[in-house]
Image 1 (cartoon, one colour):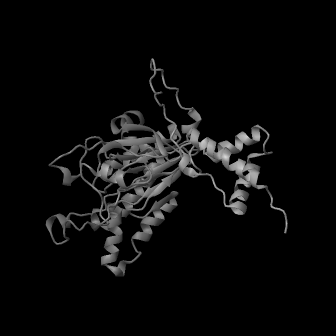
Image 2 (cartoon, one colour):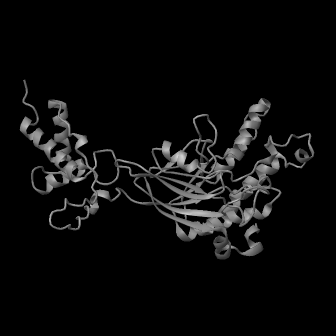
Image 3 (cartoon, rainbow, N blue to C red):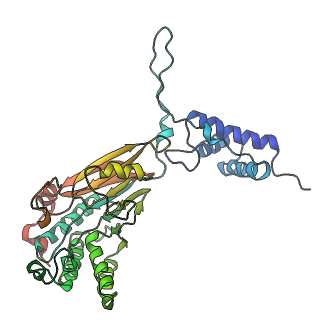
Length: 368
Protein backbone atom coordinates (compact mmCIF):
# COMPACT_ATOMS: atom_id res chain seq x y z
CA UNK A 1 0.00 0.00 0.00
CA UNK A 2 1.57 3.33 -0.99
CA UNK A 3 2.39 5.82 1.76
CA UNK A 4 -0.10 8.69 2.17
CA UNK A 5 1.01 12.05 0.71
CA UNK A 6 1.00 13.66 4.17
CA UNK A 7 1.15 12.28 7.71
CA UNK A 8 -1.79 12.61 10.08
CA UNK A 9 0.03 15.07 12.36
CA UNK A 10 0.76 17.38 9.40
CA UNK A 11 -2.90 17.28 8.36
CA UNK A 12 -3.94 18.09 11.93
CA UNK A 13 -1.57 21.07 12.11
CA UNK A 14 -2.92 22.47 8.81
CA UNK A 15 -6.46 22.27 10.19
CA UNK A 16 -5.36 23.85 13.50
CA UNK A 17 -3.78 26.80 11.70
CA UNK A 18 -7.04 27.58 9.89
CA UNK A 19 -9.15 27.17 13.04
CA UNK A 20 -6.87 29.54 14.97
CA UNK A 21 -7.56 32.26 12.41
CA UNK A 22 -11.31 31.55 12.43
CA UNK A 23 -11.27 32.36 16.14
CA UNK A 24 -9.46 35.63 15.36
CA UNK A 25 -12.27 36.80 13.04
CA UNK A 26 -11.18 35.65 9.58
CA UNK A 27 -14.24 34.43 7.66
CA UNK A 28 -14.79 30.83 6.54
CA UNK A 29 -13.89 30.08 2.95
CA UNK A 30 -16.58 31.21 0.51
CA UNK A 31 -18.40 33.54 2.93
CA UNK A 32 -17.09 36.86 1.55
CA UNK A 33 -16.48 39.91 3.72
CA UNK A 34 -12.68 39.94 3.56
CA UNK A 35 -9.71 37.55 3.39
CA UNK A 36 -10.78 34.03 4.37
CA UNK A 37 -9.16 32.04 7.18
CA UNK A 38 -7.81 29.56 4.62
CA UNK A 39 -6.17 32.30 2.56
CA UNK A 40 -4.70 33.97 5.65
CA UNK A 41 -3.42 30.67 7.06
CA UNK A 42 -1.86 29.74 3.70
CA UNK A 43 -0.05 33.08 3.52
CA UNK A 44 1.10 32.82 7.15
CA UNK A 45 2.35 29.25 6.66
CA UNK A 46 4.37 30.31 3.62
CA UNK A 47 5.84 33.29 5.47
CA UNK A 48 7.01 31.24 8.48
CA UNK A 49 8.44 28.49 6.27
CA UNK A 50 6.04 25.68 7.14
CA UNK A 51 5.19 25.34 3.43
CA UNK A 52 6.88 26.52 0.27
CA UNK A 53 3.86 28.40 -1.10
CA UNK A 54 0.19 29.10 -0.25
CA UNK A 55 -0.81 26.54 -2.88
CA UNK A 56 1.12 23.86 -1.00
CA UNK A 57 -0.89 24.68 2.14
CA UNK A 58 -4.25 24.43 0.36
CA UNK A 59 -3.04 21.13 -1.10
CA UNK A 60 -2.43 19.84 2.44
CA UNK A 61 -5.95 20.88 3.40
CA UNK A 62 -7.33 18.95 0.44
CA UNK A 63 -5.28 15.88 1.43
CA UNK A 64 -6.43 16.17 5.05
CA UNK A 65 -10.05 15.99 3.90
CA UNK A 66 -9.48 13.26 1.34
CA UNK A 67 -7.28 10.97 3.45
CA UNK A 68 -8.46 11.58 7.02
CA UNK A 69 -11.84 13.32 6.69
CA UNK A 70 -10.50 16.40 8.47
CA UNK A 71 -11.93 19.88 7.76
CA UNK A 72 -11.71 23.21 9.61
CA UNK A 73 -14.63 23.75 11.99
CA UNK A 74 -16.40 26.80 10.48
CA UNK A 75 -18.50 27.21 13.63
CA UNK A 76 -15.40 28.57 15.39
CA UNK A 77 -15.74 31.79 13.34
CA UNK A 78 -16.51 34.90 15.36
CA UNK A 79 -16.98 38.29 13.65
CA UNK A 80 -14.12 40.66 14.41
CA UNK A 81 -15.75 43.56 16.20
CA UNK A 82 -14.55 45.86 18.98
CA UNK A 83 -15.41 44.25 22.32
CA UNK A 84 -15.44 46.14 25.60
CA UNK A 85 -13.28 44.27 28.18
CA UNK A 86 -14.89 43.10 31.39
CA UNK A 87 -14.54 45.99 33.87
CA UNK A 88 -12.22 45.54 36.80
CA UNK A 89 -10.99 48.66 38.58
CA UNK A 90 -11.52 50.78 35.48
CA UNK A 91 -12.75 50.43 31.90
CA UNK A 92 -10.18 50.45 29.12
CA UNK A 93 -10.82 51.29 25.48
CA UNK A 94 -11.48 48.20 23.41
CA UNK A 95 -8.80 47.51 20.77
CA UNK A 96 -10.03 48.08 17.22
CA UNK A 97 -10.40 45.04 14.95
CA UNK A 98 -7.68 44.26 12.46
CA UNK A 99 -8.63 46.21 9.30
CA UNK A 100 -7.67 43.38 6.95
CA UNK A 101 -10.45 41.23 8.40
CA UNK A 102 -13.19 43.44 6.96
CA UNK A 103 -11.52 44.74 3.80
CA UNK A 104 -13.33 43.57 0.65
CA UNK A 105 -11.44 41.27 -1.67
CA UNK A 106 -10.78 41.93 -5.33
CA UNK A 107 -11.09 45.28 -7.05
CA UNK A 108 -13.93 47.84 -6.87
CA UNK A 109 -16.10 48.31 -9.96
CA UNK A 110 -17.71 51.66 -10.81
CA UNK A 111 -21.23 51.53 -12.23
CA UNK A 112 -23.40 54.19 -13.88
CA UNK A 113 -27.03 53.35 -13.10
CA UNK A 114 -29.70 54.73 -15.45
CA UNK A 115 -33.24 54.41 -14.08
CA UNK A 116 -36.54 54.73 -15.98
CA UNK A 117 -36.28 57.24 -18.88
CA UNK A 118 -39.70 56.63 -20.47
CA UNK A 119 -38.76 57.82 -23.94
CA UNK A 120 -41.85 58.39 -26.04
CA UNK A 121 -42.25 59.55 -29.67
CA UNK A 122 -44.80 62.11 -28.40
CA UNK A 123 -42.10 63.63 -26.13
CA UNK A 124 -38.94 63.89 -28.29
CA UNK A 125 -37.28 66.31 -25.83
CA UNK A 126 -36.62 63.35 -23.50
CA UNK A 127 -34.01 61.96 -25.93
CA UNK A 128 -31.56 64.65 -24.78
CA UNK A 129 -31.29 62.94 -21.37
CA UNK A 130 -29.57 59.95 -22.97
CA UNK A 131 -26.93 62.25 -24.45
CA UNK A 132 -26.31 63.92 -21.07
CA UNK A 133 -25.91 60.52 -19.40
CA UNK A 134 -23.35 59.42 -21.99
CA UNK A 135 -21.40 62.64 -21.50
CA UNK A 136 -21.36 62.04 -17.74
CA UNK A 137 -20.09 58.51 -18.35
CA UNK A 138 -17.42 59.75 -20.76
CA UNK A 139 -16.18 62.12 -18.06
CA UNK A 140 -16.31 59.68 -15.11
CA UNK A 141 -15.40 56.48 -17.02
CA UNK A 142 -17.35 53.82 -15.08
CA UNK A 143 -16.55 50.25 -16.13
CA UNK A 144 -20.21 49.25 -16.35
CA UNK A 145 -23.45 51.00 -17.36
CA UNK A 146 -26.73 49.46 -16.18
CA UNK A 147 -30.03 50.56 -17.71
CA UNK A 148 -32.72 49.50 -15.23
CA UNK A 149 -35.44 49.31 -17.89
CA UNK A 150 -38.51 51.33 -18.88
CA UNK A 151 -36.21 53.28 -21.16
CA UNK A 152 -39.20 53.47 -23.51
CA UNK A 153 -42.87 53.81 -22.58
CA UNK A 154 -44.20 51.54 -25.38
CA UNK A 155 -47.72 52.94 -25.10
CA UNK A 156 -48.51 51.46 -28.51
CA UNK A 157 -48.92 48.11 -26.73
CA UNK A 158 -50.56 49.46 -23.58
CA UNK A 159 -53.61 47.51 -22.42
CA UNK A 160 -54.79 50.30 -20.11
CA UNK A 161 -56.58 52.11 -22.96
CA UNK A 162 -58.40 49.94 -25.50
CA UNK A 163 -57.80 50.80 -29.14
CA UNK A 164 -61.47 51.59 -29.77
CA UNK A 165 -61.50 54.34 -27.11
CA UNK A 166 -60.60 58.00 -27.64
CA UNK A 167 -57.38 57.64 -25.63
CA UNK A 168 -56.58 54.42 -27.43
CA UNK A 169 -56.77 56.17 -30.81
CA UNK A 170 -54.14 58.65 -29.58
CA UNK A 171 -51.53 55.94 -28.88
CA UNK A 172 -48.47 55.91 -31.14
CA UNK A 173 -47.89 53.03 -33.53
CA UNK A 174 -45.52 50.18 -32.68
CA UNK A 175 -43.22 51.38 -35.47
CA UNK A 176 -43.14 54.88 -33.95
CA UNK A 177 -42.23 53.43 -30.55
CA UNK A 178 -39.46 51.25 -32.02
CA UNK A 179 -38.10 54.17 -34.06
CA UNK A 180 -38.04 56.21 -30.85
CA UNK A 181 -36.18 53.37 -29.10
CA UNK A 182 -33.56 53.41 -31.84
CA UNK A 183 -33.30 57.21 -31.52
CA UNK A 184 -32.65 56.90 -27.77
CA UNK A 185 -29.78 54.47 -28.39
CA UNK A 186 -28.35 56.83 -31.01
CA UNK A 187 -28.69 59.75 -28.57
CA UNK A 188 -26.57 57.88 -26.03
CA UNK A 189 -23.92 57.18 -28.67
CA UNK A 190 -23.94 60.86 -29.59
CA UNK A 191 -22.68 61.75 -26.13
CA UNK A 192 -20.25 58.83 -25.68
CA UNK A 193 -16.53 59.39 -26.24
CA UNK A 194 -15.17 56.86 -28.72
CA UNK A 195 -12.52 55.62 -26.26
CA UNK A 196 -15.01 54.98 -23.42
CA UNK A 197 -16.24 51.43 -23.95
CA UNK A 198 -18.07 50.23 -20.84
CA UNK A 199 -19.90 46.97 -20.44
CA UNK A 200 -23.56 47.78 -21.20
CA UNK A 201 -26.32 45.89 -19.38
CA UNK A 202 -30.07 46.40 -19.54
CA UNK A 203 -32.75 44.83 -17.34
CA UNK A 204 -36.03 44.80 -19.24
CA UNK A 205 -38.81 46.85 -17.63
CA UNK A 206 -42.53 46.24 -17.55
CA UNK A 207 -43.02 48.85 -20.30
CA UNK A 208 -40.68 47.06 -22.72
CA UNK A 209 -42.38 43.79 -21.66
CA UNK A 210 -45.57 45.16 -23.21
CA UNK A 211 -44.11 44.25 -26.61
CA UNK A 212 -43.78 40.58 -25.59
CA UNK A 213 -47.31 40.61 -24.11
CA UNK A 214 -48.67 42.04 -27.36
CA UNK A 215 -47.07 39.28 -29.44
CA UNK A 216 -48.32 36.67 -26.99
CA UNK A 217 -51.88 37.93 -27.47
CA UNK A 218 -51.40 38.22 -31.25
CA UNK A 219 -49.34 35.10 -32.08
CA UNK A 220 -49.32 35.91 -35.80
CA UNK A 221 -46.87 38.69 -34.86
CA UNK A 222 -44.49 36.40 -32.95
CA UNK A 223 -40.97 37.84 -33.22
CA UNK A 224 -41.89 40.51 -35.73
CA UNK A 225 -41.50 43.39 -33.23
CA UNK A 226 -39.43 41.90 -30.40
CA UNK A 227 -36.70 40.86 -32.83
CA UNK A 228 -36.39 44.45 -34.10
CA UNK A 229 -36.18 45.73 -30.51
CA UNK A 230 -33.51 43.16 -29.57
CA UNK A 231 -31.48 43.80 -32.72
CA UNK A 232 -31.44 47.52 -31.94
CA UNK A 233 -29.95 46.81 -28.50
CA UNK A 234 -27.35 44.41 -29.88
CA UNK A 235 -26.37 46.90 -32.58
CA UNK A 236 -25.15 49.27 -29.85
CA UNK A 237 -23.61 46.63 -27.56
CA UNK A 238 -26.37 46.28 -24.94
CA UNK A 239 -27.02 42.92 -23.26
CA UNK A 240 -30.55 42.61 -21.86
CA UNK A 241 -31.87 40.40 -19.08
CA UNK A 242 -35.57 39.39 -19.28
CA UNK A 243 -38.13 41.16 -17.13
CA UNK A 244 -37.80 40.22 -13.45
CA UNK A 245 -34.39 38.53 -13.74
CA UNK A 246 -31.29 39.82 -11.96
CA UNK A 247 -28.09 40.97 -13.65
CA UNK A 248 -25.06 40.86 -11.36
CA UNK A 249 -22.06 43.18 -11.22
CA UNK A 250 -19.39 42.25 -8.65
CA UNK A 251 -21.98 40.37 -6.59
CA UNK A 252 -24.55 43.22 -6.63
CA UNK A 253 -27.92 42.50 -8.26
CA UNK A 254 -29.71 44.84 -10.67
CA UNK A 255 -33.25 44.51 -12.01
CA UNK A 256 -36.18 46.69 -13.02
CA UNK A 257 -38.26 45.66 -10.03
CA UNK A 258 -38.10 42.84 -7.48
CA UNK A 259 -40.83 40.23 -7.94
CA UNK A 260 -42.80 38.82 -5.01
CA UNK A 261 -43.83 35.22 -4.42
CA UNK A 262 -46.97 35.71 -6.50
CA UNK A 263 -44.92 36.77 -9.54
CA UNK A 264 -45.90 40.43 -9.26
CA UNK A 265 -43.73 43.56 -8.92
CA UNK A 266 -43.14 44.61 -5.33
CA UNK A 267 -44.39 48.12 -4.52
CA UNK A 268 -45.57 50.32 -1.72
CA UNK A 269 -43.81 52.29 0.98
CA UNK A 270 -42.32 49.19 2.61
CA UNK A 271 -41.15 47.45 -0.55
CA UNK A 272 -37.44 48.04 0.15
CA UNK A 273 -37.84 46.52 3.63
CA UNK A 274 -39.75 43.51 2.33
CA UNK A 275 -37.23 42.98 -0.47
CA UNK A 276 -34.31 43.29 1.94
CA UNK A 277 -35.79 40.55 4.12
CA UNK A 278 -35.82 38.11 1.18
CA UNK A 279 -32.65 39.04 -0.70
CA UNK A 280 -29.28 37.34 -0.31
CA UNK A 281 -27.40 40.02 -2.27
CA UNK A 282 -27.63 43.84 -2.51
CA UNK A 283 -30.18 45.03 -5.07
CA UNK A 284 -30.56 48.18 -7.20
CA UNK A 285 -33.85 48.64 -9.03
CA UNK A 286 -36.11 51.21 -10.68
CA UNK A 287 -39.88 51.14 -11.33
CA UNK A 288 -41.05 53.29 -8.39
CA UNK A 289 -39.40 56.51 -9.69
CA UNK A 290 -38.48 57.30 -6.08
CA UNK A 291 -35.01 57.49 -4.55
CA UNK A 292 -34.63 55.31 -1.48
CA UNK A 293 -31.63 53.66 0.17
CA UNK A 294 -32.28 50.99 2.78
CA UNK A 295 -29.79 48.73 4.56
CA UNK A 296 -31.34 45.57 6.03
CA UNK A 297 -29.15 44.54 8.96
CA UNK A 298 -28.08 40.88 9.04
CA UNK A 299 -26.13 38.60 11.37
CA UNK A 300 -23.13 36.78 9.96
CA UNK A 301 -20.39 37.52 7.43
CA UNK A 302 -22.81 39.60 5.28
CA UNK A 303 -23.80 42.24 7.84
CA UNK A 304 -26.21 44.14 5.61
CA UNK A 305 -28.26 43.78 2.44
CA UNK A 306 -28.59 47.13 0.68
CA UNK A 307 -31.70 47.87 -1.36
CA UNK A 308 -31.68 50.99 -3.55
CA UNK A 309 -34.58 52.45 -5.53
CA UNK A 310 -32.86 54.56 -8.17
CA UNK A 311 -35.52 57.16 -9.03
CA UNK A 312 -36.16 57.96 -12.69
CA UNK A 313 -34.30 59.69 -15.53
CA UNK A 314 -37.08 61.83 -16.95
CA UNK A 315 -36.36 65.56 -17.29
CA UNK A 316 -36.44 67.24 -13.88
CA UNK A 317 -39.96 67.66 -12.47
CA UNK A 318 -41.66 65.74 -15.27
CA UNK A 319 -44.34 63.20 -14.30
CA UNK A 320 -45.99 60.63 -16.50
CA UNK A 321 -49.70 61.27 -17.16
CA UNK A 322 -50.90 58.52 -14.80
CA UNK A 323 -49.20 60.28 -11.85
CA UNK A 324 -50.67 63.71 -12.52
CA UNK A 325 -52.64 63.49 -9.27
CA UNK A 326 -52.02 61.67 -6.01
CA UNK A 327 -48.77 61.21 -4.09
CA UNK A 328 -45.60 62.17 -5.96
CA UNK A 329 -42.21 61.84 -4.38
CA UNK A 330 -40.40 61.12 -7.66
CA UNK A 331 -36.70 61.90 -7.97
CA UNK A 332 -35.05 62.63 -11.32
CA UNK A 333 -31.41 61.76 -11.98
CA UNK A 334 -28.95 58.85 -12.09
CA UNK A 335 -26.61 57.05 -9.70
CA UNK A 336 -22.86 56.40 -9.66
CA UNK A 337 -22.10 53.32 -7.54
CA UNK A 338 -19.04 51.44 -6.41
CA UNK A 339 -19.63 47.69 -6.19
CA UNK A 340 -16.97 45.72 -4.33
CA UNK A 341 -16.97 42.08 -3.22
CA UNK A 342 -20.74 41.80 -3.05
CA UNK A 343 -21.28 45.16 -1.38
CA UNK A 344 -22.35 48.64 -2.48
CA UNK A 345 -19.61 50.73 -0.86
CA UNK A 346 -20.31 54.13 -2.45
CA UNK A 347 -23.50 55.80 -3.68
CA UNK A 348 -23.62 59.14 -5.51
CA UNK A 349 -26.99 60.51 -6.59
CA UNK A 350 -26.66 63.00 -9.48
CA UNK A 351 -29.81 65.01 -10.14
CA UNK A 352 -31.18 65.76 -13.57
CA UNK A 353 -30.68 69.45 -12.76
CA UNK A 354 -26.94 68.85 -12.42
CA UNK A 355 -26.83 66.70 -15.56
CA UNK A 356 -28.56 69.35 -17.65
CA UNK A 357 -26.46 72.18 -16.24
CA UNK A 358 -23.18 70.31 -16.84
CA UNK A 359 -23.80 68.48 -20.09
CA UNK A 360 -26.59 70.14 -22.09
CA UNK A 361 -25.87 72.00 -25.32
CA UNK A 362 -29.43 73.25 -25.60
CA UNK A 363 -30.94 72.40 -28.95
CA UNK A 364 -27.61 70.82 -29.97
CA UNK A 365 -28.42 67.79 -27.78
CA UNK A 366 -30.99 66.62 -30.33
CA UNK A 367 -28.91 67.41 -33.42
CA UNK A 368 -28.14 64.52 -35.73
